[in-house]
Length: 279
Image (tube, rainbow, N blue to C red; front, side):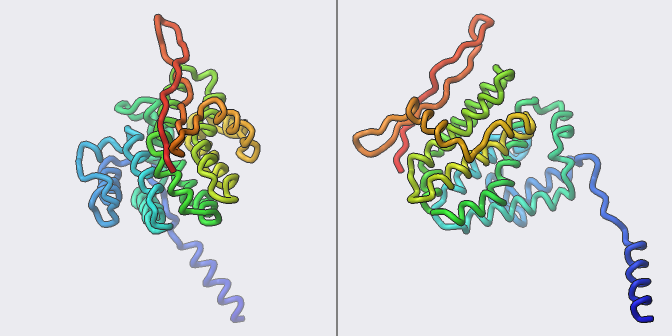
């Protein structure tokens, strides 16, 4: 009898519960409030910026959050700063009440944002969703201080890997998967050179997968599945052999991948710029 009553109560509770309905459109007022609360000086603010003009471009200029998160992952304070940023991202998603503002349809339908901008911004959020999930677990199982040192020392180079990739897929989309593979190798290179004790394979795996997540929204799982981060060591070794010079003072010079540029209505590759890195 008691079991029957409990079952009845449970059935009524389920039947009368009101399911949560996710928003079906991205409400600008909600998005702007969440951006302010999380990325400015609001309740959970990271203080990325207090400039309204910059905050207004967060969903169209990928460099704002990409540069911020790189600086945070390069801090030498263990996991404190990383966890703070990961919590802020979680709060941002909760604040929006659903994924609609991040759906590619919503982002691509925004007339104020180009296709390239939409995919790049979504890529940053996808990359750091990984970095706050499986990627964070990988960092914690490795030599996190060495990884942070590698990120901190390679800021400009890593930014260059991203901007070169975005330029190249814009001008040479038929070879997008090839440019994606080069992006992962470019990103892996500093971690390979930093040689974080026995964790070098772990670090490069993390770097590789973070970039697979960055490109996934634009090119789906076609390019994603073409790149096996477990098998990338020979490819990154070849990349380093072509792009790396060890200097007498112990620093490293890494040359970015070649840029695809348009000249006289034809596309050609121009040698990438070189950046000095000292771990």
